[in-house]
Length: 188
Ligand SMILES: CC(C)(COP(=O)(O)OP(=O)(O)OC[C@H]1O[C@@H](n2cnc3c(N)ncnc32)[C@H](O)[C@@H]1OP(=O)(O)O)[C@@H](O)C(=O)NCCC(=O)NCCS
Image (cartoon, rainbow, N blue to C red):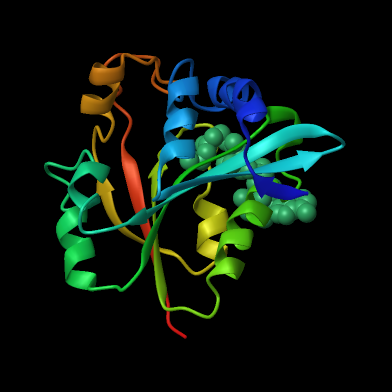
């Protein structure tokens, strides 16, 4: 079952995030912020009564465009402005409990958002963490016809210094991981 998250889910969301992204990358406060937000949404996958994965998306508006990306050198904001898309959705985070990976859960969560927008012209953007061990969402998004528009070095450097989280991949503060920016436009 997929559903929007509720208050009681927050400890489980934080636990999955700690395992998947590194401790304190996403906090309880982050999920409370989503509850109060008009542009952020979080959906969860429930399997046998356990919360096993989640997706966070954000509708990009003119107002939040400049606050969304730590992107001084990346040019992502400029790219989005030039696309002139009526509706752009940022796939912010997708995480699946390590014991439940490779069962199609991330694909199902992303597809669910595609389905809710299938009669509209929507663009999707996702900032993918370049990891050594596995390639995260790259294969999944490539199969959904996303293309890589850019690589950005040290993408989370500023973010990790501000929030002081220890990255699960590079295990350093500041984070030295790079990002691949994936983009897809659905024209109806
Ligand atoms: C990246 C991540 C979200 C993927 O979740 P997942 O549920 O394992 O993803 P899926 O099962 O949908 O897809 C993974 C693979 O299984 C395949 N798959 C899809 N449906 C499947 C099914 N029903 N049964 C088995 N495999 C399936 C997919 O094709 C994909 O194959 P490939 O990438 O080897 O080509 C998960 O590994 C994770 O949480 N990683 C840590 C956090 C992270 O890096 N998040 C992404 C950045 S925000």
